[in-house]
Image 1 (tube, helix red, strand yellow):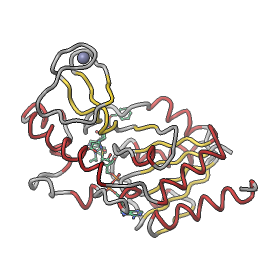
Image 2 (cartoon, protein in one colour):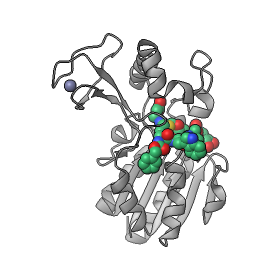
Image 3 (spheres, protein in one colour):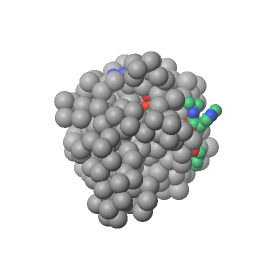
Length: 232
Ligand code: BV8
Ligand code: ZN
């Protein structure tokens, strides 16, 4: 039973991480689409670095919630029959116990070097342009996929979607592509599809089933449903 789970900002909402819909306009009145772009970075690198430095620091104040923990339990039983891909750049899935997480939009706790292309684990600020741990050049940027950039691991993700028996989307508004198109890809290859979200997403009509409510409550219930017939 191959299951693909896609998560978005909604799964981290109950942990205290603002979702994009909530955060819009919050950052000095800018829309995320304006800040999370290579153009914005080229125009005002320090401001964009500080936008991510603040979010990286804020990770210390948040904790995984029952939805993250339930998905880790699902991975423990299913092993590599579960493929977890997230749009989130926080580390809450890992801190909730998930071992394998595909961060298609990158990670706050990683820095990407514009000189050597190396990706390094990073927990500090980047607004002071520290030297790259690999090549020493001070060209580190947030290792985050901005609008207009190519998401990480699309070939692996597409392979998993084509072989999925079940595709579950959790806490995403279905506004950003290519993630928003995953449900159609999975369904076209025969997967059953389930949406778990606070409210109907933009793509809710693509799903066989939709459960609306908080992820912290609905995800553990769904995981129990999957594991009970397996004796867990
Ligand atoms: C690409 C990292 C080519 C940065 C992010 C016109 C039409 C269609 C597409 C485009 C277009 N113009 C441009 C595009 C492409 C563009 C795009 O989709 N733009 C949108 C704005 C239209 N996409 C790209 O540029 C992507 N790259 O397309 O490259 C390509 C394509 C295919 C193959 C190869 C190459 C790159 C996009 C990545 C951008 N980076 N993040 C950062 O984090 O700062 S996107 C960012 O916003 C997030 O990562 C996330 O993906 C997105 C926000 O989405 P959500 O996660 O869904 O969050 P949101 O707040 O929107 O929704 C939260 C949901 O949770 C809500 O529904 C809410 O009801 C629910 N919720 C809230 N609380 C709870 C809850 N649910 C359950 N429980 C709760 N407690
Ligand atoms: Zn480098």
